Image (cartoon, protein in one colour):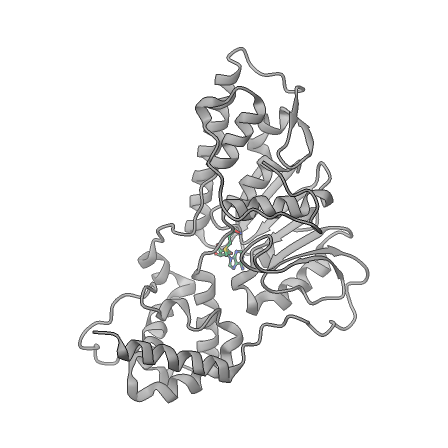
Length: 367
Ligand SMILES: C[S@@+](CC[C@H](N)C(=O)[O-])C[C@H]1O[C@@H](n2cnc3c(N)ncnc32)[C@H](O)[C@@H]1O
């Protein structure tokens, strides 16, 4: 499973290999490979949108989103749309917020608009900025299976047996469960804000534990020896206890990551591609609370804080489609933050040109 040994001279995987077949498990390593390949992805998961959008945090999300989308779609308000969006480009991933795109999550426009419908002119700059942050957190992105394998290869030399891996914003739990199987952590903890995502992760965890029990029972109907050696797929040595204790080793919490206890973490994973507006606050929390030596990895945006030493920057299209940064918690937590080198600051003129080109494409397309 693990060809690239050295992150300095890597041969990164570019696609998923065929998944291991559970019925062909002749060894505990086969069981482990089958379990790892069975961890479910989540990018295309169905979201319970109505309930989510009507719930507290997103109560005005639909109303403001529809106002923004109407301004975007109205040819006479294009200049106004550009002017309102330009101050907030730091909060927009890509050209346009996901929710106002053609296949975005907002409901269709009621026709004709109901009396008293909110218009963008009535939405303050602060509300619009918060809407863009919420829009980013509704997006769901994750590594493909082969990218996760590349990532495990990239970090394996830093990972010592024991310790706790934490995924801040763990979504449906794919990284937490995969790490618990593939790497020798004593515990892998996922922290997820959105209740329905946490709920789906809990169900997936239960299915994984059932599968593990079934495959181990089929492998050795008389019971397995917990002390029997087990070679982990990225080069670490373990015993069968690694699989027998999966239940205790995978922990999922429904919690805001800013309230999570990270004080015992040895690796913090953050798929931070949608977290542009959160990165500074996240870096400050991690600098304050992580133990010395803890590893932190994040995607797309760097951690600009003097408490973190960059160990590796894997550029986009190496480990994964986007940049992956690996840091270590070092030195003092206070002091001035260094000038961020990869600050996400889209060029306003380029952005405007991109949006206007999108309008031209739409105008030229048949209705
Ligand atoms: C891009 S997804 C990544 C999921 C997972 N880490 C993975 O890589 O497969 C980011 C997740 O972070 C969650 N999230 C956003 N803000 C959060 C917060 N303040 N606390 C906890 N989770 C948060 C989102 O709900 C989403 O599920």
